[in-house]
Amino acid sequence: MSTLAGIHPVREALRAGRPLDRVVIVKGAGGTRLQEIVDLCREKKIPVRFEPREAVDRAAQSSAHQGVIAFGAVEKFSTLEQTAESRGLLVILDGVEDPHNLGAIVRTAHAAGATAIVIPERRAAGLTETVSRSAAGALAYLPVVRVANINRALEELKKAGYWIYGLDERGTETHDQVDYTAPTAIVLGGEGKGLHQTTAKHCDFLVRIPMIPGGVASLNVSVAAGVVLFEWRRRQATGARRS
Image 1 (cartoon, rainbow, N blue to C red):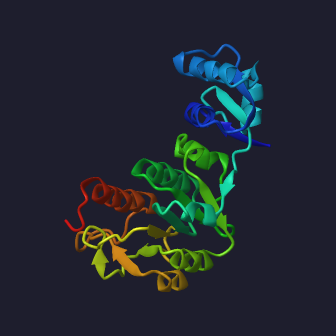
Image 2 (tube, one colour):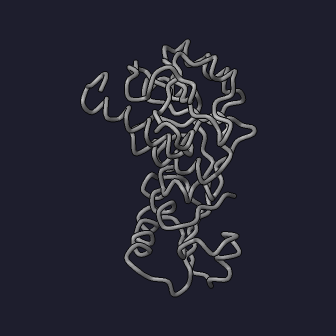
């Protein structure tokens, strides 16, 4: 059984109707945010237990739980076929290994209006408790697709009519100048390595974020995700094609 730790992840899981077995709160802890969680549990008929802090620390395997943990099915994966049918924005991660980065990207993708996140089964971060905390509740709303092979998934998306945009410093166009044709899939590479060469070959376009000459060569993948995804979001909101 998986655990969710922290006020935001537990509250958003409750709001989104995720299946939870029970919620445990540190005995003696209080405040309006914890009371909101208690009220949501009562509304949804989910058992609430109050236990000593030491017991909650052991269950969460950490003291960074803000006084609340929930037990239930955190790893709830969608399918590529289901998400492709939405014709919305898909964010595809080509080997992001840091759970903090994965969680931050999930949170940013949800805020930007993405339909789903696609991650590989191997050599990448999974949906751990750290990811859930970093996502600050966004996992309760944004479907995650786990695929055996990213390149095969890109081929399937192309057959479904998707246009694939890979973020790569070798890109010939910048992220704020390229036209994003719908339905859109944006591919982000892993920390340090960027896009794998075979993945880049499966992209219709390679785009880059322009950097100041002589400065840092690239951005952290979660920061880069925010830059590109909110440019895409701006286009959707204004109907603009190019800046």
